[in-house]
Image 1 (cartoon, rainbow, N blue to C red):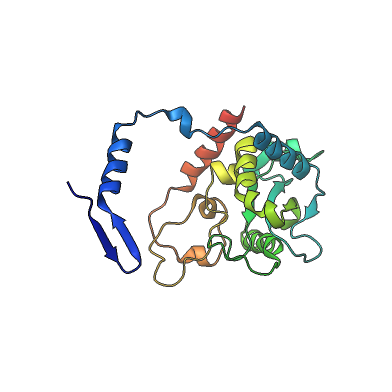
Image 2 (image 1 turned 120 degrees about the horizontal axis):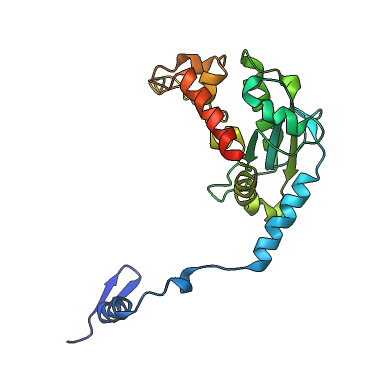
Length: 232
């Protein structure tokens, strides 16, 4: 069979070459080990970032001053809500168990169009402050936060560090009672259900507009009890 060349604009396509490559790929055996990434250095970097994170100062929510930067953060609860009695017991002397872990990425990060640094991390903490202040059974004075700013090349680690912290601490608002980080879905989207968090902690004004079916308060309380049983 004669080698056929086709010109499409400036692209020259060699159909024989394409066919040969395709045949080679089809005959190759699959070896999973050749697709698995291993790096002890990478694992050590993640451990170092978590050690640094756990040594950062703890502040009121939100922090007392606005600041520039993106990164990861954790919220700690030290109140006496019956839902979070365990957190009060473990955090009253030292902040060791977050109630929630999150991240604030730079603007344009997902599209690889990073913009000039701004206060994404501080703004996210302020959003959480506003959510807590709106509900009827939580007191903002019972919350603290710590955070780590990641800059330059370290920005690429934001999602990885957040996931590592969640795996290590399994915070209740990440793993059991979902919805704390949700935003107002906007007009025309209120047919969805309230989150477990908004059932357990009613008061966010936009959440009151949600009309979808949702679990009962009693069902969510059972989930909370199950969470503590699994943790211990």
